[in-house]
Length: 171
Image (cartoon, rainbow, N blue to C red; front, side, top):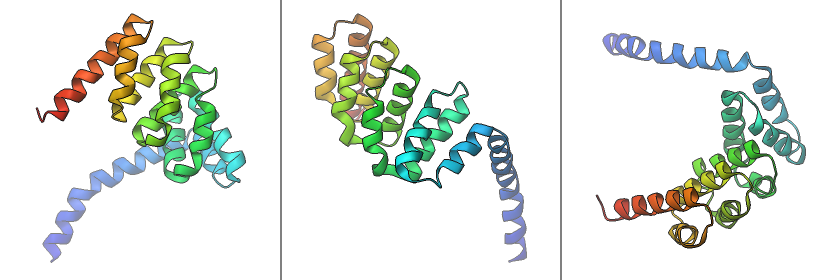
């Protein structure tokens, strides 16, 4: 029994230290602390404010904002995601697309398709194609492949469809 406790302490010690160091590092960022304090506000105030952090220049802040939206608010954030996908701010659109992809928010498939067609920024269009792939939307990818005016977006849709077919065939 004692050996088991010692083994666990030796095995888990570095993991716990790493987790502590990561949290300490994140908490040293004022925007992360702001995001956390926003979670105590009503959802109508908190979610739009946290969405704004998806445009933060610091990737760790953007990731923390995205994770907070998914883990704390989940489905309740979806109406705010829909609205944000109509934004003109590329970083916010791309941040929401990443959250939709990671959170597998299938109900926003039509809004993601709309970004692939209407966004003025190619990076948002490409991010939308990748998100459609993650959501398993072969129909949306096929339509983009056949009709989109941007060659790079069509090429990406073609690659994502090929990957879906490869994965679907069990290879």
